[in-house]
Image (cartoon, rainbow, N blue to C red; front, side, top):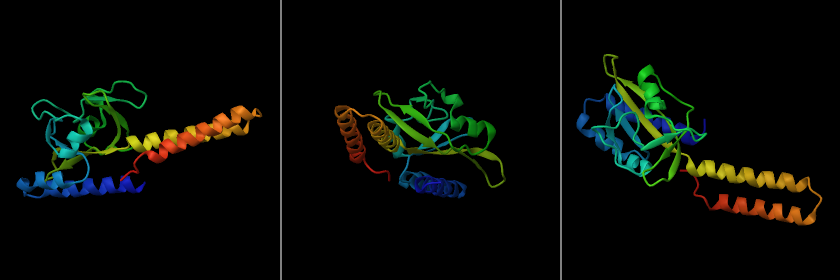
Length: 191
């Protein structure tokens, strides 16, 4: 597990600890202070709290009266297929009352931009062990995945250039590889 994933798990643990405290009035302050989008749902999936970072990631303000399962406007699989909110990892975590990991999805904002993210849906249980709802942290991996794609394209250009004897084509492919790497270098490094 990479450092960002470990950090996300630590944030989830911190949020769960805060939720198990009796200090409900400080819970919003604790969750708002976390440096990642995080939200809480009731046992039926209704969103009961979200922090400011959720609004930034989703590009919208969730509606606590109507939104269920996820703070995003629309969801898609990595293959581009629509992913109904009722089938998203958070919905699965709530239905099955278990953590869901190793998922990745694409959120579409109302303005049409898309964000690739890894969710960390985690059920939480009250002091008596009763299912009380769930919490989800969303890790934005958009730039990481773009960087991986650009580096992969650069590597493909270099491999192809090595297998071709035409000098002009080799120079073109080499220039393309350099440009792909330059684009990757301009992306911000993940936090």
